Amino acid sequence: MIPRTAVLMSLGALASGCSHNPDALGDVQPADVYDGVQDIDANLSRLAALDVFEVGDLVLVAPEGAFNCYGPCPGYENWEDEARLEAAARLGEFTAAAERAAVDPEDYAQHEIEASLESLRNLQLVEIGDMIQSVAPPNSANAYSAPNEEDILTAMAENEARADRLQAIADSINR
Image 1 (cartoon, rainbow, N blue to C red):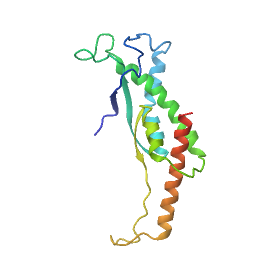
Image 2 (image 1 turned 90 degrees about the horizontal axis):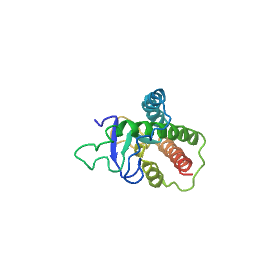
Image 3 (image 1 turned 90 degrees about the vertical axis):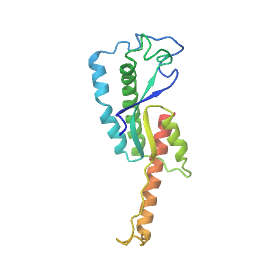
Image 4 (image 1 turned 60 degrees about the vertical axis):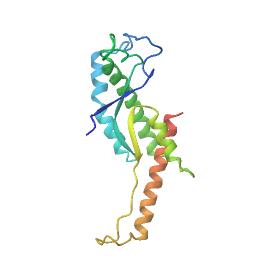
């Protein structure tokens, strides 16, 4: 099983240049940190409930230079806490935007499903899997029985609606 928090080592995503800024948290109070991090599981569940794409774990991005030593370099011992705090805030914003966009998506003539998924993956915030697909069930318990046309059309309509919501989410995030 994948741990709840996946770590992605990416250069420069949280720090600019090679310097480490110990004041990166600014005026964030301990209560704010706890509240944002406390909402991670709820936000991941809200994203999964949209039933548009597979939702994985929160992605933490290590600052550039954090591991140029044997283990975390001096000054980077708490990089995960800082990254989790920043990711929790971004996740909250992403989840709210995704929910708003999924409520009333436009009907897109051509769905660019992979491009939409890739744009969401490039946020490096949450592991984004494939778009969830509805499949028509067999017409009977017989494994060789084909689904009936009504079930096929229903599954196709669900997939079209899901693709519309995916595109709307990607468009709203990438504006």
